[in-house]
Length: 180
Image 1 (cartoon, rainbow, N blue to C red):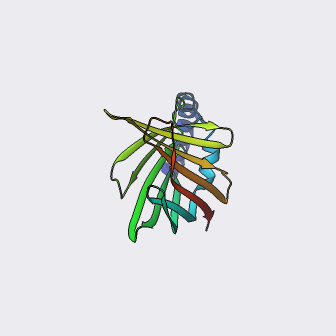
Image 2 (image 1 turned 180 degrees about the vertical axis):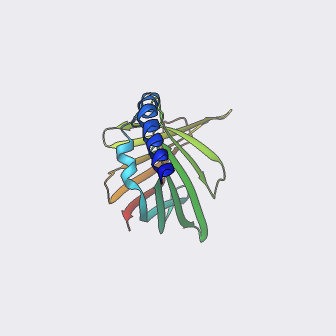
Image 3 (image 1 turned 135 degrees about the vertical axis):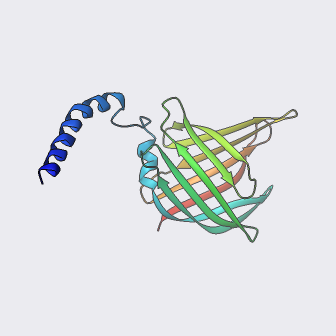
């Protein structure tokens, strides 16, 4: 019994001595970007009404689902999106990181394209916009993905593509999320 009490006392002394030192090394809130307050409440399961471009000028409307999870530190959210594109399963994983004070970041990989895309983001009023750019020898490809009307039980996204360096934008997908 005395050994148990002694261990507790030593543990409390260690916390009192080491606690303030650790608090000085690590900030109380590891994620300083204001966007964390917009995205962290979105954790949960979602039903999605999805409008997806299947060819230039041709769109398919479908139902999809999403699961959004916050990381343990509260510095990122991960979205697992499941739907169907032209009768075949479609999946994507998107990670939004707001733990970097310099830039808001989003990364995406999907089952149709298989490549990993890294977007940089910014907030413009009530819209959070992420942009991706790839300079090719003959043209500049650009994607922009926007989060709009962010609320606890609903939000919308829209993705647009430019194949001419941003002079013209075409809708790629639009989604309306409703909490399950």
